[in-house]
Image 1 (cartoon, rainbow, N blue to C red):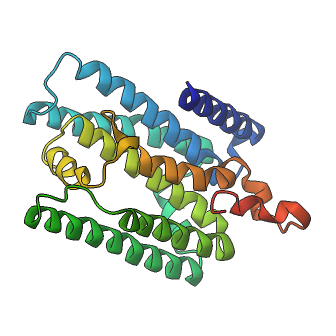
Image 2 (cartoon, helix red, strand yellow; image 1 turned 30 degrees about the vertical axis):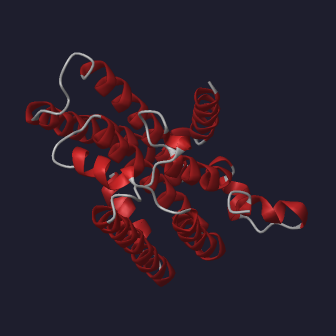
Image 3 (cartoon, rainbow, N blue to C red; image 1 turned 180 degrees about the vertical axis):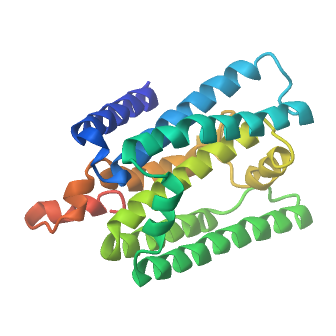
Length: 248
């Protein structure tokens, strides 16, 4: 109920913001999160209903998963985004990323951090295969991912908050889609993700879904997502800390 309430509140705020930017003349960033959230929710509902009657671990189901995602993405959500921003989303996205050298440096730094996280995951799984008596990672290893998250957000908050906003939306979409793949055991990555992430599970992920990393991303991103204008402005007083609420 808490998750659904938070999702409803976020969608309500995003819809209001999009409606206020009448005629598609608002900042495209304002629409990105709204379209992404609606797309992810609809995909989750569709796949949950579909795979209730089908075996999701077969190649046929996996092919249908990828085709449905591509059809809805390219045939519905991309045109919707294009209608809202009055230009092709791909062209806007590329221009947005290469707008300044600072953004390229940040993207390079974030790519390095992402690769580092992947190396840690692979290393911990290699240790598990050689030491079956230690199926879970230590708390120190978990805190390493928290450090990576902070190291990702602090430079973005300091140097380019709009880029951080967009990057967080992209990461959120990637996390949710990968969780769909893992949960529904979509070939060829579903079973691999289950094996790789098992070593990081604890009592907080005792259910069928692994949501800890998504919760961490949401907690750090919500101040920037819900109050982008305040976070982009030069603030004084207590409001100065608003963009850093998720990190602090």
